[in-house]
Image (cartoon, rainbow, N blue to C red; front, side, top):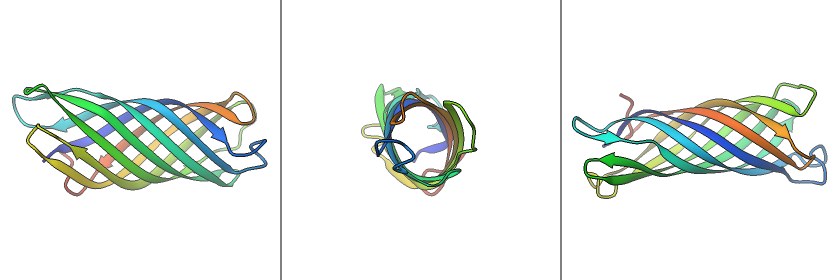
Length: 166
């Protein structure tokens, strides 16, 4: 069983508005490349590395300062030494996103949500665990055009269930 206190994800990506102009359509979709910094407790004598990851998201801006967003994260593999194997993980969360009204192309935001995650240990102990997670984070987007924004985000993921906190 994995014990994990958090995964800190730093994401860099693009988000796309669904209409001809963002004001015309409150829906958006996006994706990102990320880097997860972990603090697994895998026992004495083992070392586990961090992971590159992929992120997909889609959302709906309910009102000017509030959006609801579904997010999928997949981490490509945390290297475990010994035995020089890899652990992959995924997470799906539903998040509320607070967007303070600001003029200009930079739009900061805060987010919080709940979801599920899973870890596949493969040959590392032959274990796969799932559990409920809480996600809190923030970031900023930069409007490149009315339809395309670049964003950077950092998030803290707290686990429960089979994936226990240390």
